[in-house]
Length: 500
Image (cartoon, rainbow, N blue to C red):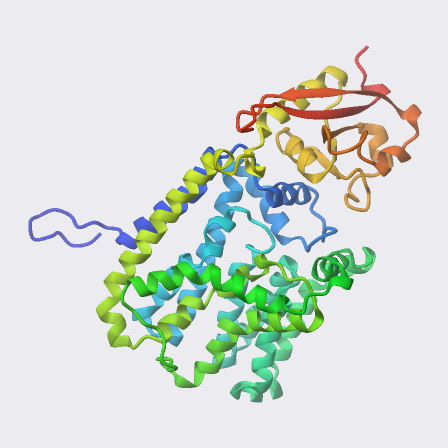
């Protein structure tokens, strides 16, 4: 507690920035949970995956799913949104530590806080997925790599290897950042370290930790790698060699709020000079701040690959650090308060915009978005239907990850999701298990001519269960046309579970 003020009242014990940051995190955790009626698609998918605790999934490595499921189980709808905010806070922590080394303590706090000025770290962070989960990982990698190369301590190299493995468990595109770090180590002034044990210790730690996932990949025939290749190349006949320029243009759009904040504060961060504590760190800062985006853009254009905008999410942890490094320290000191005010105004405005959009997006867009679906009503209807047909608990929901995932996450305990009715996408469900538990297949009316294909359900002998089917008409308040949600269903109930 601080000393008493001159008038005898106690001074405010918590710094204002702590209060503001806590209010922001609380708002971005609570408001979307209360103002939306369903979770984002990637979150629904991640929760369904995480329930199964696999070493990997057919699209991605497992870490985000491992985090999403317990967060959802512990805190319900609030959990995934809180997870996103905690990811940003962890990134702030590591950016601040790195900025203290590069810029000094005077500029470090804002170099981290201005992360909120990057558009990617506002509305897109509501969906905790493999892109957003990389944000703190890349920040941690940069800090530990910097410490390892500057101090050459064994523990720093171990930490670097551990975070490299965490990154590969998060998303394989972490390899882009690792390639930038490796490139700097190979051609930068610290290349002498390659003759010492540190870098090789980091590599060994990373390989040991990632080995279980590697073995899973071999067993799964590299499923996520095939998915990544398909996402990257799409139609090879229409390869786009200008993809890199388009990707960079989109990234610049995401940086516009940060630029506006800096300019509104009266700062002009250009002139070609970086004001670093150690001028020799200039190449290092350029490597981590710009290297990944330039590498992806160049690779995408050369290969004619399809580059997705959201791949840039983790790339801009150090954009504000680079901007502030280009501002003379004395100029920064004079405009510091103005910069804080501009950032505070932006954070307030984007929070209000988020709340307004979360509550009114259907009216503004003229149609409901994913987060406007009546998830609770859909889940309750499925629960009642299954209980009317079966004495056994609902343990498997089949269908597309969206409809089946929404139904599953509303049940307690949460059942498994048989994604697309296919064991290739849901190896945790077997034909033997289905014979014991049965399943509820759901799909939206009109999405299929009849019913979706469900290969695993079709592989079970028909004599294993009684099949019922029907249609639900579920009130959908956020459907601007006023029409209810029409869901078709088919219940596969084992004879042992049927009411007498």
